[in-house]
Length: 541
Image (cartoon, rainbow, N blue to C red; front, side, top):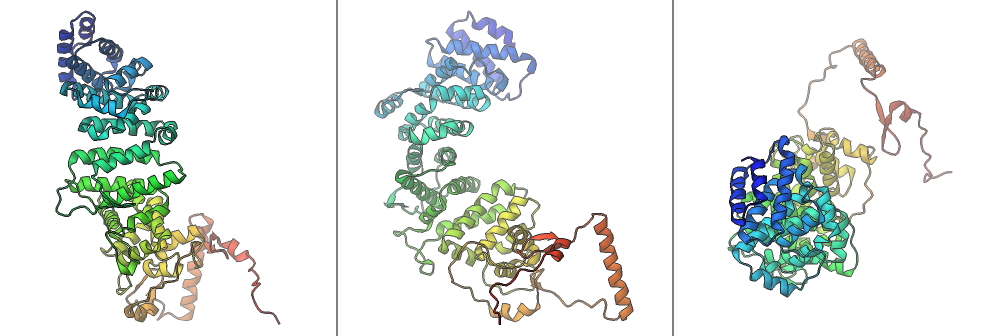
């Protein structure tokens, strides 16, 4: 449809003709996401003309059609100048029933929303969709939102979440997520002045149907209950994303302590829920993991401390159901072919690592699942289908962040004991972590752990003398290649090997390294020249 023709008719057409004209444009472009650069100026003018129409007193059906046109145009970030103004953003905010910069009584807003006609509700939804597009694509629009305090209107809307139609709630939460993601400056204001964390917590309580049976304990979901409806799941995911942004920075105070513990309890409840599909359940768990990583690690006790539901006596009466879900989620992410481990796996690995480091019961439970007492030492640690095998394989992953996170997780499960780690992984797999931590010579990490010890199995004790410490398994006997050589032949081969190493070293193909006294790697010449430390504890005559 010719844009020049539309623009010329918009100036003089009646409301009914405008609606028909724009409806035709909308139908033709509903699936258009790439636009002709040559028509950029015309599309910008169309944005301005549509906003002018919205500024008049037109019927809801015409408003909805205009907003649909604006939503299509807002997919192109280069034509948003007319919208990304104070006047343009306030027009859209008014259509979305968001009172920018003004406080509104919650009962009054709830009453207004209940009396909206279906047509007016569609206008609100389309206006929210436009705001989401414009805010996402225009830094200027983001700044205008900050200037007119649009987030205050969003928080006023959050207070009436129980009365929301689904799409109004969904796009209100999405707009809050976008503003808090793209404008970090508003996060503090949202938390301190407009209590957005508390409001989002209430949204999650309502959406996830949380029923409290203790201070920070939600009732166990009914195993026979239907899966969480898709619409509830969608709103919950948007709320979790917004909450993630608001908890990125440090928090403090008794109110924050209570609020964050409530969040941890709600996330535990979410981990126990099932959605309509496996993919949606995994997405929900992913958002829960991301948000749990933002909470102080001391609050993870909420995940296992559920007195009403009870726990396992061997883990101090703590309930490990949520930790089991997190372990299952981690293994699914490891098994996911072609996935981005850095984004999909490292958050849950980091969460379980810190949880294990600071909570003894969590570490003991996870170790029992991931690193049970060794029995079979005939296979290399990285070969097999157990969760231990999969994690050991990750210790040599090409992505530095992934391999460091996996290695750190196993190291913490071993209470940061080098000897214990090598028992489960072999020196070759663990060398990268040990070099980074300055522990190539053995020893322990800095964290203090409880004194409980795991006893070795009889199978491991009997095989231990025959285990190759580099590969971590018992190797089949290999023929000795020098057994039938004379002493002269052995000396010749040794000299030949030394010359090869020397040549590669001089050509800078390799660089011989040694371990310094502090356990770190250094060029071989430095380690040979380092004077031995005096043993101040030795007895003297």
